[in-house]
Length: 130
Image (cartoon, rainbow, N blue to C red; front, top):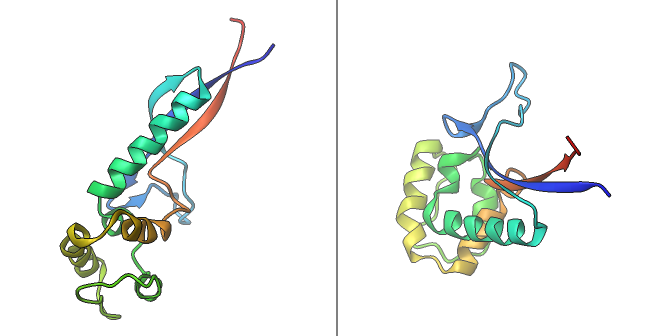
C-alpha cells in the first residue's frame, strides 16, 4: 500500500512577486511549513491559514496589482474608488485604508482576484519503505 504525506507550504515572494526565472516564469518556490499524514487535518490547517491571511494581509502588496478594472467590477461599496492611473504603491496604500471597513464576504471577493497564486497550498509526497 502506498502512503502519502501532505506538505503544507507557503508561496515565496520577492519584492511582492513570486520568484521567477529570466523569462518571468514562476519557479515554484515554496517554503514547507508542516507535514501531515492526515489529508483532512492538512486541509483544515490550510483553510485556517488562508482565513487569517485574508484578514491581515494586503493582497496588492503580495502580488501583481494591475487589476483596478477587476477591483471596481467586484461590486464592493468602496469608501473611495481606486483610480485607473494609480501605481502599485498607491493601490497598496488604498487597500490598507479600505480593508478595515470590509466585511469578510467583501474581503473574499477581493482575494478571489488572486486565487491563481494562492499564498498557501498542499502538495502530496509519496512515502517509501526506506
